[in-house]
Length: 127
Ligand SMILES: [Zn+2]
Image (cartoon, rainbow, N blue to C red; front, side, top):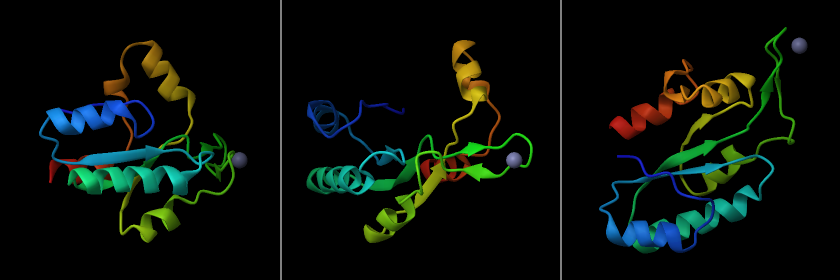
């Protein structure tokens, strides 16, 4: 079972960690956020609760040019790799901003979206 939690390290994750036997967490962040601060807080909380961190996923990481496939980092350069390295964590994926995600969500078919963005995350979770 996967529990999707709201942003932050407040009461919701605390309650989940205290009431469900959690095997591990995946930290989801985005480039425009204060990634270092967010990851630091999440890492500290997980360590306090003795919960393994499977890795980090960067959402809204880039836009891919439909013509030449160049990745454009519209929120600026990503710092997720440096922050992950600082804490000995893996970056499990970078999810682009793409109309395909919005279209799949609107159609209620996000689970049918064919991508390899999260292949590493899926593999890590299955392990
Ligand atoms: Zn282009």
